[in-house]
Amino acid sequence: MTARKPYHHGNLHQKLLEEATRMIGEQGVDGISMRSLAERVGVSRTAAYHHFKDKNALLCAIAEQGFEKWQTHFAQLMREQSGDMNGWLKAFVRSYLDLSWEHPEEYDLMFGRPVWKNGEPTESLKSASFACFQDYVDLIRSWQGKGKLSKNIDCLRLAQVSWSMLHGMSRLLNDGIYLDRNSIDAMSDSAVEMILAAATT
Image (cartoon, rainbow, N blue to C red; front, side, top):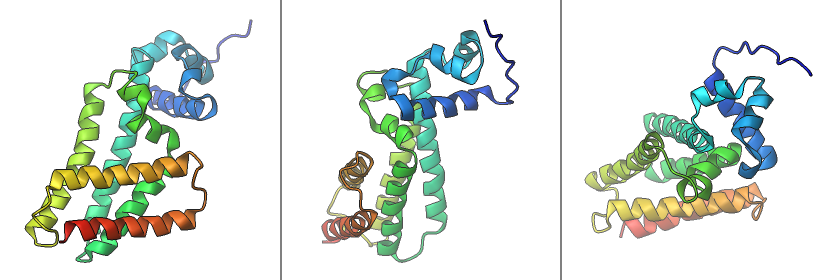
């Protein structure tokens, strides 16, 4: 029997998240367990359970990390915001699609069935997801206050509908239905035009 190699990484919590994300990409959510994750990382199950009480907590943590990445990126976009709302929205849409494409396993858990329907989202995950969406709602509300968007449309409903549009495009891209990124870019621009047409009348 091969002796377990000692684990020397300084941040086991993050290492478990990273390795679990890789395993999900290789085997899917059903192919990962706390036991297999611990073996893959080279630690005891007790060590893994010290950081995540069960598989659901692990999946929620991966999803939460995805929302944190998006919020950081959104904050950067906000710092770069200019008076050109059309240009900013195009950058926003493409950034959203890029992040979903670059981190597909995280994205699937951020908005997918394993956590939200079949699992039990943690309070910290709920808070992280709400904060991301609320930032977007607040942005739309601020544009309405500046007269850039019509106040005749409810800012919450506009945020919900436009975010749903982006999610649908992300799913089509990540699921391999749309493989041509040039087409996705053109669709992104069309999505922005549709949002602005609906929100400026």
